Amino acid sequence: MLRGQIVTLVDPDRTDSAQARRGAIRYLIAKQDPRGFWHDFETLAGSSDEWVTAYVGSVLAEVPEQQARQAAYKSWHALCRRRRWSGAWGFNRITPADADSTVWGLQLAVRLGAGTSRRAQRAFRFADRHVVADGALATYRRSGPIRHFTRLQRNMSFDGWCSGHVCVTAAGSSLKGFPGRDRILAYLRKTQLDDGSWPAYWWADREYSTGLAAEGLTESPDPDHIARLSRAGEWAANRILTPGRAFQRDPLESPFATSYCLITLTHADGADAGGGAARHAVDSLLNSQRDDGSWAPSAALRIPPPHMRDPDSHRQWLNGGRGGGSIQVDHNALYTTASVLRALNGVHHG
Image 1 (tube, one colour):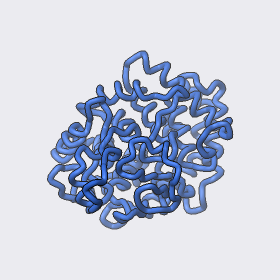
Image 2: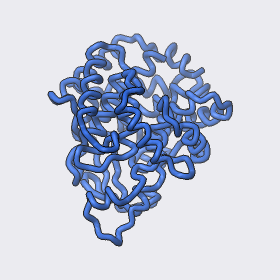
Image 3: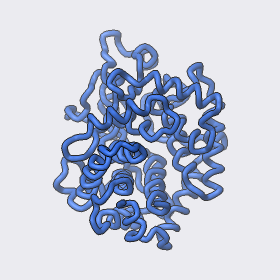
């Protein structure tokens, strides 16, 4: 397995890697508010607390350091104090609950051993109702709640936001105990692109959806997944070693994209012969960490117009915008830093 190769060739116990992980943990803990939430991504709906808290907490729940686990438990208790009739979570406390935020809340619960709790079981049922006919997870299953929240005109279609999204589906593909997981994996088998990557709906970078899809397929016994993982790994290695040939931005200019290339490589078998791409990715991440333990904000969240099913066809993105048709990065560097920590932790523990 390539995962074993990376552990040997990248040297997970190198001092600078351990220091980088400790610095990232300190940064994330310092940014957690007294109630247990993290806040990032300023939009017209305000900043995210529930979704970002679920994601950051789920990363810290995988880290063996005691302080990280304590922060993760604090975030889970904070999310449990948010009362919604569905038992699920949303972008923040005022937005309707959605499948993406709920999946990350469930990842946090499962990693903390709370997956069988009453709150988690309600959230599982909510997420399962968002698996649409083709096996994809839809961020919003019905347009009514989000239409009411946005106060957009009745003739505005929400077909895009209420359709199945590969990036959300990929996030749920490794979720243990999820009833819809088999359908999700079947959907991911159908949607892998010819180059080995998976497209994203809510993100400007395919590295995110590809890394999450690779993680989900790794945990499935289906032998067909081996070839798919190899193709994904080759795509990730090419993104690191020959970024100028790709249609997207250079991932080495984005710690977020680099981290998910590395996550893909840790789940791919034999795609990075010699481990050169993995070493290059790790070196890039370690060299770009900031003094406070964070990495520069680079998780490029894009908000397609609600009707748009294919955001890659949109050509008029507003960088730094806060509504539909805009792309923004995590101004507090939380999503980026948590993603890099997850990638480095994966290499460390193999």
